[in-house]
Length: 229
Image (cartoon, rainbow, N blue to C red):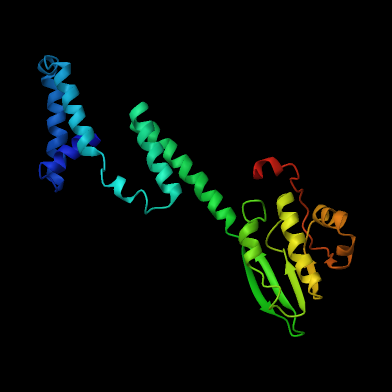
């Protein structure tokens, strides 16, 4: 059907009538001229299919490979290869799955922080937008400015969660930066397991972690260090 559509468009068919005529012509061929179609040599049909491939493929894609995101370029290449090896239907299916996985990964990496100032001068970072895991620690670290922040800081995880050991280490590193500068920091709405892992190597964190009945309960994956490598 894609091949027929390309032929139709290249022949100048743009309106609805062209699509109707193409369908009727195909119907006539199938119902009344099948014995004649069978006489067409396979070699001739192969040549026609080669021309259809040449006309269907968007050769301009090669020019934009270096200008589009790497994930999009990867999907484009994989779909093209799968189309050649299998068929277009499977290629579309594979392309949709890969695009969905890439979108999920990129969305998970976009961790965000709302910044506000309390009446007592405490600067609050409300973490949201995605989990804190090995894929988002870089963005997480960029949200903070220990040197220029006020003397009292609060990091609130009410709308986020620490997902793995890398997230724990990133949070520990940020907290230590503020403590080394002599600033007061509080960590709120962390899960019990997260608190335990933070305090295990830094007992002094027991004084900066606040507990409440609103604290979430979830487990942290501590065996993903191999995945980071």
